[in-house]
Image (tube, rainbow, N blue to C red; front, side, top):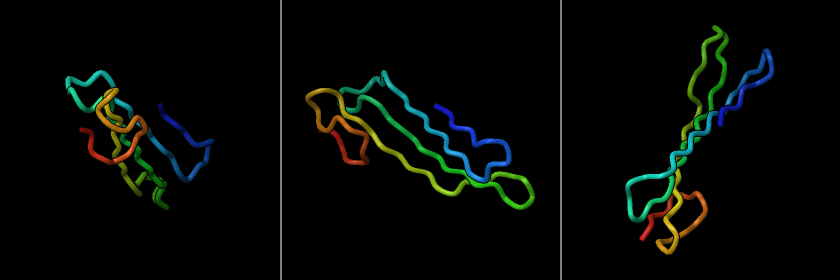
Amino acid sequence: MKTYPPEGGEQAVVTVTKEGLADDSVGALRYVLEFERQASGSWRLRSAAWAQRCQGGRGHQDFTPELCI
């Protein structure tokens, strides 16, 4: 899912979710990248976060950085 700011926006968030992994514990990975526009007009990465959701019966079912079993 991509989120674009309205014209002239100063911040943008990009969320990438990868499912269908060849892993018996991890069901999906999610990356959230936050960007901010600089005075020059270029974009700068402000923050990056990573989380995972476990396979059924292998731990938590929400996206968190906690490990799966």
